[in-house]
Image (cartoon, rainbow, N blue to C red; front, side, top):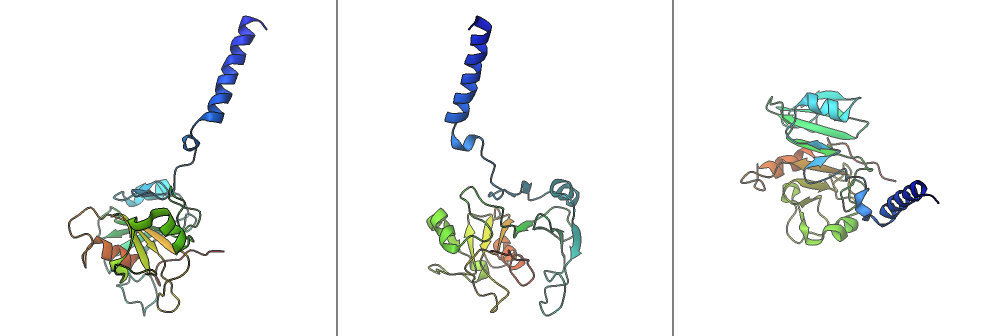
Length: 212
């Protein structure tokens, strides 16, 4: 083996060893659900930014005022949303301001770094996060509840287990995940961002994950 050939062999071995012994997470795909984004989409962007980021198809919907006895998108009257059916995501806007305040997904392929997302069981959720997840007061949850309609993680994620069946009775699997902004004071008080996000992300209006 001449010097040039030996050098090529050494480089090849170095690359092979790096591939074998590199940390497992170094080449892993980034989680689709994080405390800051869903499918790479953060809050606060414009409608055009989401259309560019999440792609076609999409459709625009205006809210009908929150009366669930009527057909259509029933949320607060000043709400609009962009639906991305292929992505299985909704992006919400309010008050005529072109900055998204909530993003919701019912895509079973989207998971957190801990492997939790739509269609995950509540036991899987609690095993992944322990006492970090709490019953969501925005959906009537109280401390100590073991089977609430939804759970909160930090000040930005809500995991929904509520269903259109039996008046939104909790299901055995996660039906959707919402990202919202809980950074302001009073975020978890009635009328605050958590309560609004909990209403917007709940059925019957919010599309739910179809789980096998």
